[in-house]
Length: 425
Image (cartoon, rainbow, N blue to C red; front, side, top):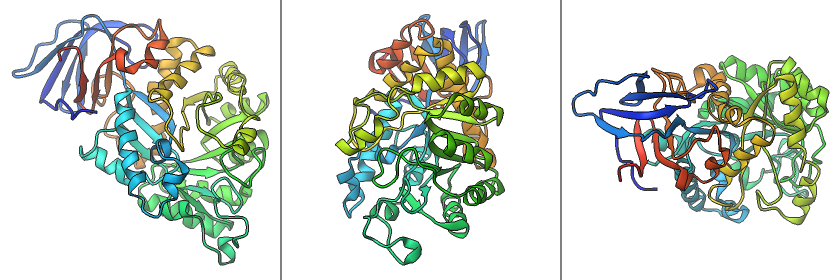
């Protein structure tokens, strides 16, 4: 991605149709950006401040930047072999590329749900590296033999004097057993700057030892993690596929269920009854590179996402969109393609709301740990952060425009800075 084209003191975007991330219909108008925020949104002319930069939108659609509620920037373009090297330099180099690629594809904010993303977040916020805003979880907290335990099976558990895997050294995972260790692991991520905590409440298809339908962490361990996060003003998200694991997490006070593909209808309804979130991903074969054993485990969840999203829509459950891309290069626009799949269940406008204001409502539940709480994200409103896309076409009518960001997104702005502009250049 080329260096940013701004910032300038003021930018006026005129003659656009605005999807504000909240309302169902487009509104013709103009937008004034001053510094990093949106100062005015009006249906009438905006007086151009002296020395302001003016962009004629040509009747195109202006919308908030896209967001991803389940990203892994430090793993997105790295293979397992890349991350297993003693020198982590390659991992971080690929992370910089992943951050640039995400912004180039129109994603202006992500919730990073496992990985050492604190440094790249700080570099992006400082303007050193182009990339999306990051809500980092830090290491995924897992039990021995759980979704985050990549130590070999012959190694003694850490609680019995063993040493964890290299992924724990990197800060991708943190294996903890019992309430004291769980508290230490959670507090350790908060100390590093985690905006929310990610726990493995059940098995997964990338991990070697745990059945995907298993339940992980005791109720006491889960409640301890929730309390530690709550004491810092934030929340816990739990990786869980089957109903028993989801229900245990919800009973402990977990706010966000990640995945949920093996849930039954009553459990999806329960997520809504608990005022929690279903943060899920429309997985299809080939989205991530898998070994034969991993692909065999993944078969249990493939094809489930339309079912659980249908139930979520039926019961009004709050849904967040995420990708969960990791461990190897995919198509550069893979996240965009995955987002368009939601339109098989929801209308185009509802999909756009989920990927903008909806996800950002969940992000904001990090409370005082929210690094961007100074203004709203995911909306085009006065006082909000100036994170916006100018689309050549109308995504409320043709959601597939989102899947082709190189062509469709003619202007990309984040924090009031222009990172792409093919309208004038």
